[in-house]
Length: 166
Image 1 (spheres, rainbow, N blue to C red):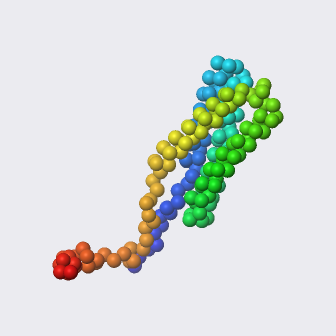
Image 2: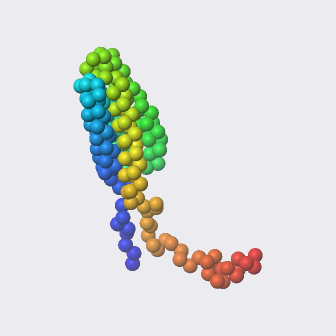
Image 3: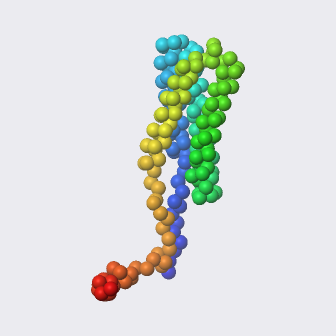
């Protein structure tokens, strides 16, 4: 009598998503503090907005890829690559909107917003790599043990003798 495997190879994306977001927000706060000390309030606001754009864009992309991986795992790579392209486009559009609105001319410092984007992106990617490598993801899903042939002729002594006779 065999029983069905109760293991679920899917793991939650929440720890990786929340960890990446927390680290990116932390980097944005540090950059905002540094910007406030060095260049004033517009620099601080710019760094926060830059890191905020990164967190919003990366979080939505990660959720989209996870949703597809749950429904159709075979499409995950295609969706991940497409999502990356869309993330770059959306981040660029966000800064185009900020530039055209005039916010980068006075209320926000453009160089500090760029620093927030770069800092947020680097910390998000590093955090995501570290957190993903720490997940316990099985290499393969366990199957029913009755379908595995334990008595393979190639591994037995008589099988080895027969293989050597050929």
